[in-house]
Amino acid sequence: MTRTGLGPALRRYRKLAGLTQAQLGERTGFDPKTISRFETGTYSPSIESLVSFAEALGVKPKVFFSDPDDEDEQRAYLFGVIHNAPPKDLGKLIAAVDQVLSKP
Image 1 (cartoon, helix red, strand yellow):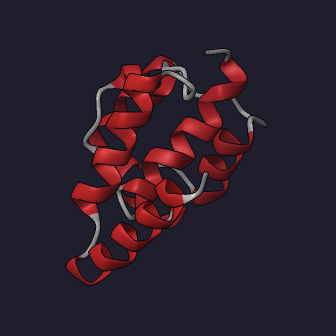
Image 2: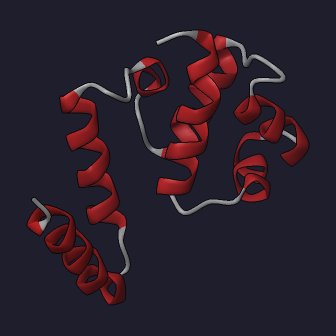
């Protein structure tokens, strides 16, 4: 993954954790505007920043460098979405998966 992929990966895992930029900022000491700039690629986070984000998001730092098109990464991401989904949303997720898989 290129450096430009860091921002979308940070955003993806922040959202997976169910956090806003402000909430991630509270956990890491970064201003929400700075987190926004990291996510859009305007700023590049340091390794220390990525470690801090990983700890706050409950992931390993390597996820920020993983190829989002890699099958194993896609499966891990989907597992995380399902695992962290509120019980009330599980039915919606199942319906969405069924709909996608039933299309020819």
